[in-house]
Image 1 (tube, rainbow, N blue to C red):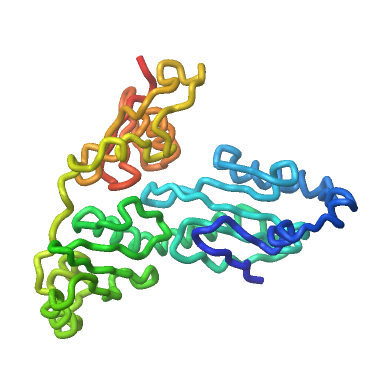
Image 2 (image 1 turned 135 degrees about the vertical axis):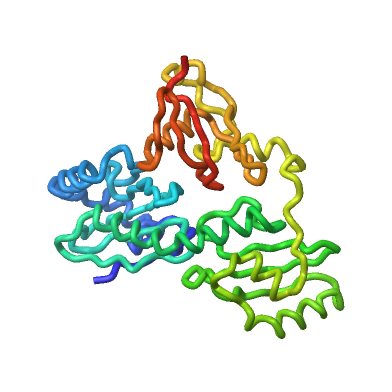
Length: 316
C-alpha cells in the first residue's frame, strides 16, 4: 500500500483533517469524537521511544500523538522537519506526511510497518535530493539571485538578475538537477534577443559533468553577474538565527548567560554570513554524526553553505 502524499510545502492535510473542518453544529451537540483505544497510545509511545524522543519537534491532537513532527538530518547536515499524521484507523490505515521537499516520496506501508519505517524511507528520499540541493546551493552562492533570497528546501526556481532590468527565471528539475533547466527571460522587449538566440543555438552543448553556473554561462555566451557584496544586506536580515529562526533566545534561567541573547555567531564564508545563536549551533552540531570534538571545541559544517564552523562545547 502506498502512503497518500500531501502537498510538499503545506502541513499534512489528510482526509481526517478535512473532516475536522466539516464538523457541524449538529455533530458538536452529539459530543466529542471517540477517543482512540489505549493500545494505540502505548504503541505510538513505544515507536517514538524507538526513534528517539529527542527527534520529536512537535506533537499535537489526541493527547499529542495524532500529528507528530520529527527532526531528520540528511547526510550533508541539513535539517528537515517531517510531519506524520496518524488517522483514526492507524495502523491499519496508513499515515500521511508533509515536508519541505520539492516532491514527496512514495512511502510503502503494510500492517507491520512502524513510524521508524516512514522516517527511514524519507531519509532515503533525502539522499536522492542531495545533488539537487547542492546545485541550488551553488546557484545561491555564485549567481545573483533576487528571488528567493531565503529559499526553502522545496523550492526549485530561482530568479537571476542579469543587470539593466533583465532577469532569468530558472526551474531546476529535482529529479534530474544537472540537466538543462527550464528558462524564461523577463525584461524589456528587445534586450534578450541575443541571449534567446544563444540559448536556442547552444542548448545542446549543456554538459551534465560541468558545474551548473558554468554550463549556464556557456550556453548563454554571457558573463553572469555575481551576487552583490554581502555587506550590502540589511543588518536585520542577518540577525535571525539560521537554526531557531528567532532573533533572541527565550528568557530562561537554564540558558544562563545566554538567556534572552541575540545571535552571537556568524558563518565566516562571505557568501553566506548566516547568523546563529552559539547555543543553537552547538546543539545542532551535537546532533550530527560527522561533528568532531577537540578539547572543548566542536568542529563541523555550516547548515547553509557547508563551510567549516567551530563552537565551544560549554561556556567557561
